[in-house]
Length: 272
Image (tube, rainbow, N blue to C red; front, side, top):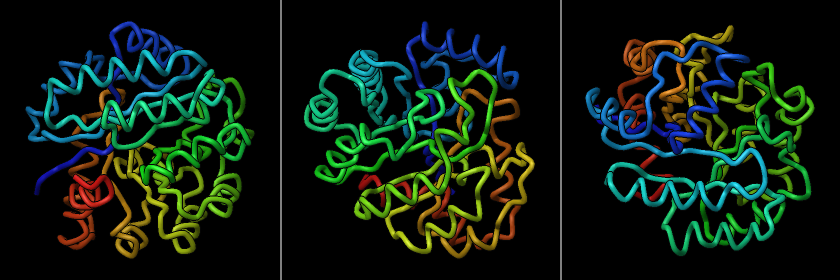
C-alpha cells in the first residue's frame, strides 16, 4: 500500500540540535538524529515519498523564520507537504497565517500546547482558529495530555486535555482539527468527541507502536476509519521507524481501513 506519513518533523539544523538536547534531558533517546535532508532520504529508502512537514514555534517571533525555511526546504521535494506555524503572541499572527496560505501554499498549521504552555481554549488562539476556518485549512493541534514529559513550562494537564478541546469545537465546529497521538492519554474521550464533531481527526503517532502504556483501540479505529491518519513523529523516535506501519499491517483492521490510514485519508483531508 502507498504510505503517506502525516506527522514528520523537519527543522533547521540549529533547531534540531536544540530539540535533541531537550529530548536527551527530558524524554526518550532519539534513534534517528538526522537533519532534514537525511530525514527525507531515509523516508524514501522505506518507500515513503509523501509526508506532512510539521514544525512549531515555542516562543513569539520565531514563526516567520521557521515558515520561510519550511517553504524553501519543501520546494526541493515534491512529496514534502508543509504546514506552517504561528505563536498567538506574535506581533501579527493573522498576517503570518495568510502568508502561509497565500504566499507559501501551505496545507495548514501546527500548534503544540505543551511546548508553548498555552491552552487550546485560550482566547489568544481564537484569531488563529478563525483564520483557519476562513481558508478552510486544518490545524494539527497537540492538545492531548500525553505524552507528558519533564521540561515543559507547565504540567500537560494544565494546558491540554479533551475538556479544553471540547470548548474549542463547541465554539468552532467548522474547524478542521487533527489531534496527534490519538489524543493520548485520553483516547476514549477523543473518540467520543469524534462521534460528535465530524471535522475532528486523529493521527496515530507513536500509539500504534505500543510505546505508550495504552490499549490500542482497534475497534474504534475501524469505526472511525475515515478520520484517522497514520503519522510517525519521525525522526524523533525511540524505536525503529517502521514499527507503527508494521503494527497497522499486522492489525485486525480491514485492508480498506489500512489503506485509508496509510494514505487515502491524508489525501482527502489535505485535498492533494
